[in-house]
Amino acid sequence: MPDLSTRDAKLVQYLNEAYGKERELETALQAHIAMTSRPPYRKRLQQHLTETRRHAREVERRIRQLGGGDAEPMQLPGPDALSKGASLAAEVGSRAMAAAKGPLHAIRGTGEQEKMLKNAKTEYSEEHEEIATYSAIEVLAQSLGDRDTARLAAAIRREEERMARFLAGLIPTLTKAVVKEEVPAAERRTNGSSRAGRGRASATRGAAKRSQGSARTGRGASGSARKTSSSRKAGSTAKGAATRKASATRKASNARRAAGARTAAAGRKAGTGASRAATSGKRKAAAGRTSAARKAPGGA
Image (cartoon, rainbow, N blue to C red; front, side, top):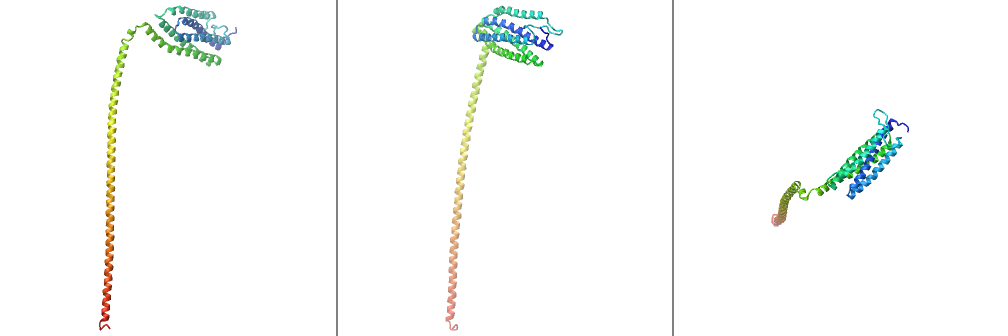
């Protein structure tokens, strides 16, 4: 086997750590599946077991592509190097530890629901360790210009994050199941439930008061609206009366002016007739005087 460069040796080191963790979790998941009675939870664990086995194969393949040989930590250059034998022993030890935890997990918890809750909490913790591991590998590979390793680490990390989200949603459900299974119903209703009941009653009273206040406010607003409407109607009526009065006044004034104009015209007509009559009288008198003068003797 050719010696690895410092770059590739560091990549192989991190990948071997991830490979050892995948093999450890494979053993743990098998034990947890056997203890799980909830069908959706059991199905998701079986799916993730399949993913975990695939992750291990993909990481192992990448180790070989980098020249690391069989998927086990290689001897690394530098003062912090681990021997091949010591690394292999560490991997075997981690898998043996996982196998040993299985029976211990089977007896932990006081009931079936609590056993599944404790398993889910352990799996949640393990998933976040894997997320951290593959995040580190992704950044390491990017920093060293290894795009293939970076893509592989990112793809596996996303699947670990999906499993962690599933467990995050499951843990509260399992916790409530533990309460229902192990705590008597009468005890579940004391203390906190009483306080909650009092809080709900207080909230109900407060809502009733707010409703009453809103009703009063609504009635006040309605009364105010009616008053405003009446005021508007009264104002409109008064305005109409004033308008009609002003119109009548204008009509009367116009009628008076028209009557005055007719009277003045009649007076002017009468004056003109009298003036003509006087003129005619004067003319007739002058003619009479002339005629008399002609008839007088001295006038012949």
